Amino acid sequence: MSKKVENLRDRNHFDTTEEIPKGQFADIVPLSQRAYLEITGSKERDGIFELGEREAVIGRSEECDIQLGAQNVSRRHAAVLFRQEEYLIEDLGSTNGVLVNGIKVVKCVLRNNDQIDIGGVKLVFNEDKRLHKK
Amino acid sequence: MSSPLEQKMLVTFWGTRGSISTPGRTTEKYGGNTPCVTIENQGTRVILDAGTGIRNLGIELVREVESRKQPLQIHLFLSHTHWDHIQGLPFFLPAYQKDTKLTIYGSPKKESFLASVLKHQMDYDYFPVSMSALTANIHIQEMSGKSIHLGPFTIDWEEQVFHPGGSVRYRFSAHGKKVVYATDVELDLVFGKDNRTKEKEAAARAYLRFVHGVDLLIADGMFSEEGYPGRVGWGHASIPAVIEAAAKAEVKQLAVFHHDPQNSDKYLDDLWAKYRSRYLAGPQKMDLFWAREGLTLAV
Image (tube, each protein chain N blue to C red):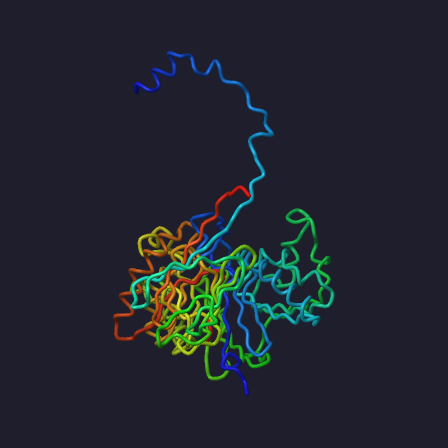
């Protein structure tokens, strides 16, 4: 038996516990859903892009939300959309296509650690869902 | 001028799991819904199987109708009527819309007629809503003849015998490309070296002829190499058996489908890494992936 448990018993700790009213267990705390695209293993500058609930266009054009300078990236290459609480990537008619885990896709719901290839630039998708107080 | 995608078949996976739906954190990548796939081109959409994945498809289609204000014309092809391939039908929202025109195609070889199998699934003992509550204009058609023509698609079909009760495989051709959907068949028995019979030889020849050179083969690869020996005769293929058959038939891209409910995302990822590197390095260069829910690709 560990020392910590002995101490608790010595102090008769549990006899003094008071019942918590049930309503206090569940604060109404909104769930925030965030996702990230991280550039890995390419000549492109390193970077982590946070994705919100708004569409994020990826491409070579300066107007894109996520700008990638590599030559094989189309001007407007792909978009990441947030639909029904999920992120998905869609090819916008690019020359070299969008690959998810090595498969050329038109559209694909994204899951943690999916590896995306946009014109030779490698990105990894990750999301988290956490409670936050406003 | 038509866009490049107009000349392509768009294939979307709505359910990829075999036997029973498997919701949960460990299956969210490849998905927990049972079989349902769509193939779409130039406004014609066909649905393959009505497993639980068809529920999400139905929600999507109803949204589409609301925005386009055009009634749906749906063609549903069933591989067979085992639960995992039909149990989503009572939850398919467009079937409850009176403007929907739904044609359900299936094997003419069922012992009881296709219509009565689908109706019995919605008997009061199993489900509170009867099939008569489906207000869509539903036509159930047992296939006859060799080919079916729908919009840009030519659809060929064949019966598969190495599955309890049988199943049907389909081949969709459009714009010079071909997609085959061939699930629920035990290729280990069809192609295995032991106990060769005339029936097996004929089945092997027919399979190779049907899938030869196709651009995408969506095929049952339910069991791992290690898991298969305890499941001989269950009517499903091991992953090595389907890969070898596809490579032999010079298939260009293989989607391994009908995942074992026991197989987690991590397990499937490990298997994919093992087999993909082997085949990408091989002389055929067949592309290989594990079908996953929410994936659309162009063929």
